[in-house]
Amino acid sequence: MNRSARKAAGMIRNRRRAGQLAKTFGHRPRSLATYALAASDMNRPTAEGCANSLRSVAKKLGIEGTRSIATRTIQGGGRKRTEVPTTQYTPAQVRQIAERYAPRNPAYKRTRARLLALTAA
Image 1 (cartoon, rainbow, N blue to C red):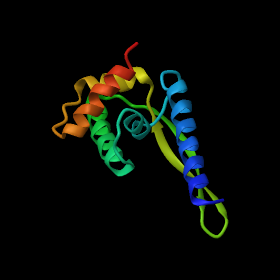
Image 2: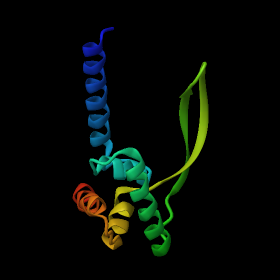
Image 3: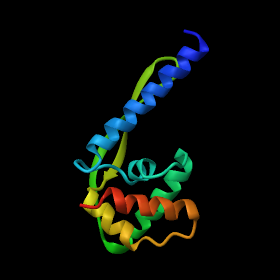
Image 4: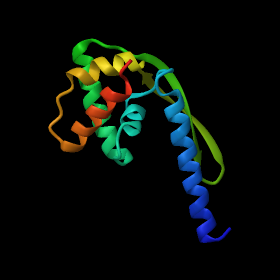
């Protein structure tokens, strides 16, 4: 596979993932990091920082998500599956959290606005 074909395949894969996420965004619970990634144009570490801020607001509000386990595949000499504990929140819970969230970072402010728009029912 040459470089341009790899790049095209990666673009198609990313578009498909974004479409799948958008299709199920308002229907099933997801982690706050997933909501932050879907609602922003930030990279993963920055979105996780935003999700940590959202988690602290959720804790202050007393909103507890549903505990679940995500299975991740790690590639390194072979395929290894690990289970990671996560907390998932419904879109209604995320809307409550986002309404009380008061970020100072301009990127986080944009993410908050998009979260409110995406979770509007």
